[in-house]
Length: 420
Image 1 (cartoon, rainbow, N blue to C red):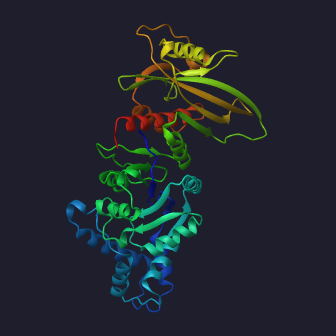
Image 2: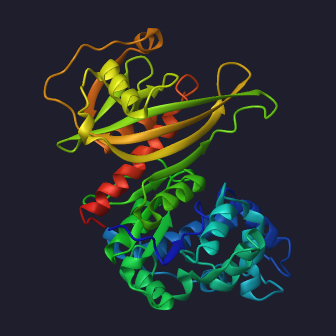
């Protein structure tokens, strides 16, 4: 049985906020401009060279195996004190203020798309939130930054690893967060952009990992043997949480917002099938554009939904649905641009069903032939990975809807199998 979390922990950088425009030279310059004394006339670039060397030496303390991913943490206060005093630079402010001045100048920060809506949603539904971030800056500095960026947050606590000895993925830092929450690990989800520090680390203590991808570093290797949820937008996360509240059937809304509100509207009802055999689902694959989608299509005027399902599945796949096995599985309300200057408002009803052993002839319409549609049985993981690699979706707008549904089904399967 699926259970929504009692608390969701968030990473900070590239999860709550995008700090992709980060230039340490800008930060160094801002600090040096405030120096009382700089007898060696150290430039921002020279200061960064010294900082890089210090960082390298710190990494050596953890040994060869941990050099690129140390699990112990040092504070900015100690780092800056060594750096500036070693170079003979005198500053007129406390070390805590040095890190604030540096960070404000170095990082051009913006809130992650949709994060305010997500945090408000979680608060309204009584799901607690908190922050756990790998960071040399102290918790006070991080807290100030978060409150400036997200003034309406309701975080129960905020943790910077510099104040707690350990950094992710070490289990002790996650255990510290769990202790502060006063909850068992299996009631906590952790959202972050790093597959090792965030996903592997959270899973290691029994939390549910959520990989947030929009600002994630490219080329990360997925940790073996770990089940985790992948989220491409916080709006998508809300949709999935709504889906699983009380383990209800699918009830999602997809609004692409790619239309002018003054355009005329066209309403459409469609029916689609979940046909599962030996862990694989019947899908339609386009030879032209490469996407996978569930078999199904529009209902004819006066046609019953079950009859639409039988007809569409057979036409697209040749599979013959057994009427007595049809079970309602949910619906998706979709709004997007239709043909030309038109708003398409479509409700897709999804039904789980089984099929006969023998098949019938397919009967594709003109556009389905043009798109080179062929039936295929694939796992949800394969279909999702395939669809997420496709960047040009202008001619296949339904890929957003069906990929979201695939993720929801995959998560339900994992929970049903008792995987964490």
